[in-house]
Image (cartoon, rainbow, N blue to C red; front, side, top):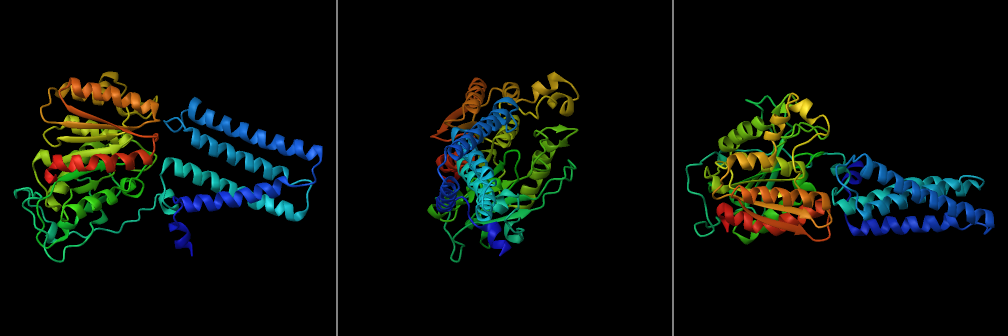
Length: 430
């Protein structure tokens, strides 16, 4: 029973419609009392106070304190206001009233909270179920045998040279692997790896690679659970005889509420972990190409910032970068320079994506795809500024605008679905 509750899909419209209909019935019950002037004024005052409290909570958390690093959408603000209004209406029904009305009022409060949370979740597109919300990794350990041993010297497979063998799985496999911080001493959480069907046969071909990063807060599984990357990969594989890139999503954060900013610093050697430990592990355990044209790096939000930092700094390793809603520069707020760069503003400036691109210019064969939600005004400014810096440094660029979305996973899903065929083609699978 508990497992069913934790895995029940709360991202379906059917769940939202059902909980909203139930809440509407409860609201009607809580409103319908003896229609005295005093009660009507009390109920109206409760709803108004609830709406105002919700607006204030959104304004303080988003517009003043900037707790989330993004501005809350009008849809999220609406759900917060509705939740507060419902709770306020339930509270004024606690006195004076009969015991059964008190019971309904008490039961209504958590249901109003659930309805508001479900609406906000639909707006952000973040969680499929409670396991996702609590950060539970749904993927089992991935057993790697001789069939995935490194063979980087082999010629990269193409759709023209590959013939799918009999018995090849219909879909790819996702699992977790431990990538130790041998050189970096970075105590990373398990990475998530996707192996396409072609990588699961007895003698797999040499395949291209994508390294992807979640945002912060986040976990390595987020691009698959919230971003639905596996659906995009499997759909591509079905259309290409089981071929798709191998995807590795390592942990660049250490924990959800922590941000080493993908540099080596007192906060952790995140850069060495990714560029040395993770890269060594991939070459030592997976049958992948050593050609940088066959490697892509990408991410969402903080993870997109990391992707630009690594991709721009290492054109000898990556030729394709996918930056979805990237920050303009790595940051943990006002303490960024002091905590990670020893108080050196120049050291911090040198670690920003624009400085990295300027330092490594001119680029010759790199492509960076900058993508952002249409309603995400702040990160749209960031994306346009970064794109300008990339073009000035000689990179080829693309700009993708996700219609009607903001700084959320709906944007990620749109961008992945829209851009992946082109990325795969650049990696040699087009």
